[in-house]
Length: 346
Image 1 (cartoon, rainbow, N blue to C red):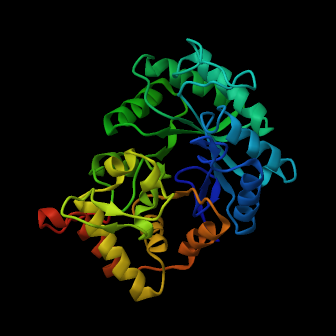
Image 2 (tube, rainbow, N blue to C red):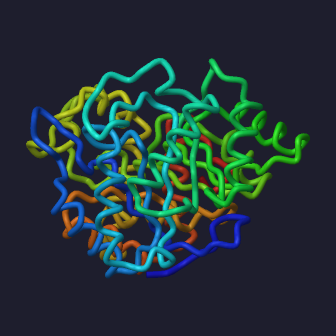
């Protein structure tokens, strides 16, 4: 494993983070990743040098299960060896340790909910501090000043080391950074957008903010829900006409087509497959390496492997190297529809 400094912070993390979205998650009555499987995956990630673990209070059924699995596993390790990240915003149904309907203050980014969730997260993880705490979404109902002041207090109290922002518009991120600056509050240091080589939308403006403010970028779903692993094939003129393995995400989730299938995505996948053949790698490794090698900002993809075999393939991206021309071919494929050669390397 190779390591990198997390943006403008003084913390060093593995070039890949391990995501725990599937821990305790139920699909059609079946738990996708059980406690035993979660512990095995965490051990495998640590054995392969991953020290950066990403979770959220929302993950699992009931909510909080993923954090609980991680906390149980951490009891056998030195907490100081790990960089732990969690998130807050969504309705939470696990406060009492069992499933329940969220109450009126069990969601959002108001002071009451944020403080309650920090304490719950710390308790479930079995730690007295978080290395990184994200706001999971932008809260239209709460003034951003209230949220930022609350998070600033938590940093000053030593319960959080760094602040992060997940999934928001460029103007919202800019506004939050400005509010922190003028009020001398702790700013966001890390961003977590949906971003991968084949992403259907252009997020140049968002990434420009991250570059200008020296924010690290930790993209979730860096393999486009498995699309960029190459296990799906196009079957028609419409980009949503496809076939893939039974039980894969494209076979389970209706949102797969909306989020991951586009003309841009298929163009990029074709190029990634060709490059993978050239360098004796897998498409997944090429797609991850393209993110890791972003030259203008620290980029640490969050991988969510379901098996140790998938994890090993993901970790293999660390040993892959892309030539400048190969890197640019993926960039060009992202803009093939416009017939232009895009200037930036993303």
